[in-house]
Length: 216
Image 1 (cartoon, rainbow, N blue to C red):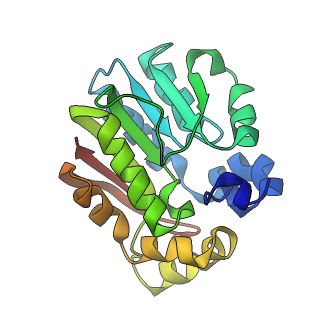
Image 2: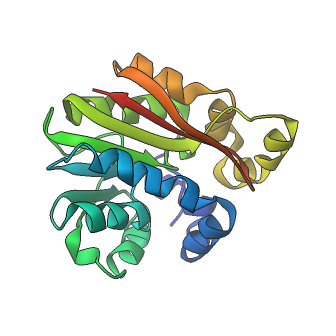
Protein backbone atom coordinates (compact mmCIF):
# COMPACT_ATOMS: atom_id res chain seq x y z
CA UNK A 1 0.00 0.00 0.00
CA UNK A 2 1.37 3.40 -0.94
CA UNK A 3 1.05 6.66 0.92
CA UNK A 4 -1.46 7.98 -1.60
CA UNK A 5 -3.67 4.91 -1.09
CA UNK A 6 -4.19 6.09 2.47
CA UNK A 7 -5.56 9.49 1.40
CA UNK A 8 -2.84 11.56 3.01
CA UNK A 9 -2.26 9.14 5.91
CA UNK A 10 1.20 7.57 6.13
CA UNK A 11 1.39 3.82 6.94
CA UNK A 12 2.97 2.64 10.17
CA UNK A 13 6.76 3.08 9.96
CA UNK A 14 6.26 5.12 6.80
CA UNK A 15 5.93 2.29 4.28
CA UNK A 16 3.50 -0.61 4.06
CA UNK A 17 6.30 -3.13 3.69
CA UNK A 18 7.52 -2.28 7.18
CA UNK A 19 4.15 -2.69 8.92
CA UNK A 20 4.85 -6.23 10.10
CA UNK A 21 7.81 -4.90 12.10
CA UNK A 22 5.79 -2.16 13.81
CA UNK A 23 5.13 -3.86 17.16
CA UNK A 24 8.78 -4.84 17.53
CA UNK A 25 9.99 -1.36 16.65
CA UNK A 26 7.65 0.27 19.16
CA UNK A 27 8.54 -2.20 21.91
CA UNK A 28 12.26 -1.54 21.43
CA UNK A 29 12.11 2.23 21.11
CA UNK A 30 9.07 3.73 22.83
CA UNK A 31 9.29 2.70 26.52
CA UNK A 32 5.68 1.51 26.35
CA UNK A 33 5.45 0.36 30.01
CA UNK A 34 5.88 3.99 31.03
CA UNK A 35 2.86 5.35 29.13
CA UNK A 36 0.43 2.76 27.79
CA UNK A 37 -0.65 1.59 31.27
CA UNK A 38 -1.08 5.21 32.28
CA UNK A 39 -3.47 5.77 29.38
CA UNK A 40 -5.40 2.64 30.30
CA UNK A 41 -5.66 3.85 33.91
CA UNK A 42 -6.89 7.29 32.82
CA UNK A 43 -9.62 5.81 30.63
CA UNK A 44 -10.63 3.10 33.11
CA UNK A 45 -11.13 5.72 35.82
CA UNK A 46 -13.97 7.12 33.69
CA UNK A 47 -15.85 3.79 33.73
CA UNK A 48 -16.80 4.44 30.08
CA UNK A 49 -19.43 2.49 28.19
CA UNK A 50 -17.89 3.37 24.82
CA UNK A 51 -14.22 3.95 23.98
CA UNK A 52 -12.90 4.78 20.53
CA UNK A 53 -9.25 4.16 19.65
CA UNK A 54 -8.63 6.38 16.62
CA UNK A 55 -5.89 5.03 14.38
CA UNK A 56 -5.63 1.87 16.47
CA UNK A 57 -2.87 0.38 14.33
CA UNK A 58 -1.93 -3.13 15.42
CA UNK A 59 -4.37 -2.90 18.32
CA UNK A 60 -2.00 -2.92 21.30
CA UNK A 61 -3.78 -0.15 23.18
CA UNK A 62 -7.28 -1.20 22.15
CA UNK A 63 -6.64 -4.70 23.45
CA UNK A 64 -5.18 -3.41 26.71
CA UNK A 65 -8.25 -1.23 27.21
CA UNK A 66 -10.60 -4.10 26.43
CA UNK A 67 -8.70 -6.28 28.89
CA UNK A 68 -9.48 -3.76 31.63
CA UNK A 69 -12.96 -2.62 30.57
CA UNK A 70 -14.44 -5.81 29.16
CA UNK A 71 -15.69 -7.04 25.82
CA UNK A 72 -17.71 -4.76 23.59
CA UNK A 73 -16.65 -1.44 25.14
CA UNK A 74 -13.72 -0.58 22.87
CA UNK A 75 -13.79 0.11 19.15
CA UNK A 76 -10.51 0.19 17.24
CA UNK A 77 -10.63 2.22 14.04
CA UNK A 78 -7.91 2.42 11.41
CA UNK A 79 -7.76 3.33 7.76
CA UNK A 80 -5.18 0.68 6.83
CA UNK A 81 -6.65 -2.82 6.32
CA UNK A 82 -3.18 -4.41 6.48
CA UNK A 83 -2.47 -3.11 9.96
CA UNK A 84 -6.03 -3.93 10.99
CA UNK A 85 -5.49 -7.55 9.97
CA UNK A 86 -2.53 -7.74 12.36
CA UNK A 87 -4.70 -6.38 15.17
CA UNK A 88 -7.51 -8.83 14.49
CA UNK A 89 -5.11 -11.78 14.61
CA UNK A 90 -4.02 -11.06 18.19
CA UNK A 91 -5.20 -12.84 21.29
CA UNK A 92 -8.30 -11.18 22.73
CA UNK A 93 -9.20 -9.47 19.46
CA UNK A 94 -12.76 -10.71 19.76
CA UNK A 95 -13.30 -8.36 22.72
CA UNK A 96 -12.77 -5.31 20.49
CA UNK A 97 -14.98 -3.98 17.72
CA UNK A 98 -12.76 -3.34 14.70
CA UNK A 99 -13.69 -0.87 11.99
CA UNK A 100 -11.98 0.43 8.88
CA UNK A 101 -12.32 4.20 8.75
CA UNK A 102 -10.54 7.52 8.63
CA UNK A 103 -9.56 9.68 11.60
CA UNK A 104 -10.63 12.71 9.56
CA UNK A 105 -14.18 11.48 8.97
CA UNK A 106 -15.22 9.35 11.92
CA UNK A 107 -18.29 7.19 11.20
CA UNK A 108 -20.01 7.95 14.52
CA UNK A 109 -22.77 10.27 15.65
CA UNK A 110 -22.13 13.51 17.49
CA UNK A 111 -21.52 13.01 21.21
CA UNK A 112 -21.77 9.23 20.97
CA UNK A 113 -18.46 8.21 22.58
CA UNK A 114 -17.48 8.43 26.27
CA UNK A 115 -13.71 8.41 25.73
CA UNK A 116 -11.42 8.82 22.72
CA UNK A 117 -7.79 7.75 22.59
CA UNK A 118 -5.34 8.41 19.78
CA UNK A 119 -1.69 7.38 19.95
CA UNK A 120 1.10 7.82 17.41
CA UNK A 121 -1.31 8.93 14.70
CA UNK A 122 -1.30 12.71 14.31
CA UNK A 123 2.35 12.96 13.32
CA UNK A 124 1.52 10.93 10.21
CA UNK A 125 -0.85 13.62 8.94
CA UNK A 126 -0.33 16.96 7.21
CA UNK A 127 -1.50 19.93 9.25
CA UNK A 128 -4.95 20.25 7.67
CA UNK A 129 -5.67 16.58 8.36
CA UNK A 130 -4.34 16.85 11.91
CA UNK A 131 -6.84 19.67 12.45
CA UNK A 132 -9.67 17.70 10.84
CA UNK A 133 -8.92 14.61 12.94
CA UNK A 134 -8.91 16.49 16.24
CA UNK A 135 -12.14 18.27 15.31
CA UNK A 136 -13.74 14.91 14.54
CA UNK A 137 -12.65 13.55 17.92
CA UNK A 138 -14.28 16.56 19.54
CA UNK A 139 -17.48 16.03 17.54
CA UNK A 140 -17.99 12.38 18.48
CA UNK A 141 -17.00 12.78 22.13
CA UNK A 142 -19.83 13.35 24.57
CA UNK A 143 -19.83 16.60 26.57
CA UNK A 144 -17.34 16.19 29.40
CA UNK A 145 -15.90 13.03 27.87
CA UNK A 146 -12.20 12.22 28.01
CA UNK A 147 -9.71 12.68 25.19
CA UNK A 148 -6.22 11.18 25.49
CA UNK A 149 -3.60 11.76 22.79
CA UNK A 150 -0.11 10.30 22.79
CA UNK A 151 2.29 11.56 20.14
CA UNK A 152 5.60 13.24 19.44
CA UNK A 153 6.00 16.66 21.03
CA UNK A 154 8.45 19.51 21.33
CA UNK A 155 11.89 18.00 22.07
CA UNK A 156 13.40 18.20 25.53
CA UNK A 157 16.74 19.32 24.09
CA UNK A 158 18.96 19.11 20.97
CA UNK A 159 19.65 15.41 21.63
CA UNK A 160 15.94 14.60 21.44
CA UNK A 161 15.59 16.81 18.37
CA UNK A 162 18.32 14.87 16.58
CA UNK A 163 16.80 11.57 17.70
CA UNK A 164 13.56 12.50 15.91
CA UNK A 165 15.19 12.81 12.48
CA UNK A 166 14.70 9.12 11.55
CA UNK A 167 10.96 9.50 12.24
CA UNK A 168 10.88 12.47 9.91
CA UNK A 169 12.67 10.48 7.22
CA UNK A 170 10.14 7.64 7.48
CA UNK A 171 6.93 9.60 8.01
CA UNK A 172 7.69 12.75 6.04
CA UNK A 173 9.29 15.99 7.12
CA UNK A 174 6.26 18.17 6.34
CA UNK A 175 3.89 15.97 8.37
CA UNK A 176 6.13 15.60 11.39
CA UNK A 177 7.64 19.07 11.66
CA UNK A 178 4.52 20.51 13.27
CA UNK A 179 4.83 17.99 16.09
CA UNK A 180 8.39 19.11 16.77
CA UNK A 181 7.08 22.67 16.93
CA UNK A 182 4.61 21.64 19.64
CA UNK A 183 1.40 21.88 17.62
CA UNK A 184 -0.64 19.10 19.26
CA UNK A 185 -1.70 21.00 22.42
CA UNK A 186 -2.65 23.94 20.20
CA UNK A 187 -4.75 21.69 17.95
CA UNK A 188 -6.58 20.25 20.96
CA UNK A 189 -7.42 23.65 22.41
CA UNK A 190 -8.39 25.10 19.02
CA UNK A 191 -10.87 22.24 18.51
CA UNK A 192 -12.74 23.31 21.64
CA UNK A 193 -11.43 20.86 24.23
CA UNK A 194 -11.04 22.11 27.79
CA UNK A 195 -8.76 21.40 30.75
CA UNK A 196 -5.77 20.35 28.68
CA UNK A 197 -3.20 18.53 30.81
CA UNK A 198 0.20 17.15 29.84
CA UNK A 199 -0.07 13.85 31.69
CA UNK A 200 3.33 12.48 30.75
CA UNK A 201 6.43 13.55 28.84
CA UNK A 202 9.36 11.23 28.32
CA UNK A 203 12.50 10.67 26.34
CA UNK A 204 12.52 7.78 23.87
CA UNK A 205 14.98 6.40 21.35
CA UNK A 206 13.36 8.56 18.66
CA UNK A 207 12.55 11.75 20.54
CA UNK A 208 10.19 13.32 23.03
CA UNK A 209 6.84 11.58 23.46
CA UNK A 210 3.92 13.27 25.22
CA UNK A 211 0.58 12.11 26.59
CA UNK A 212 -2.11 14.81 26.70
CA UNK A 213 -5.56 14.63 28.28
CA UNK A 214 -8.49 17.00 27.82
CA UNK A 215 -12.27 17.19 28.17
CA UNK A 216 -14.89 17.50 25.46
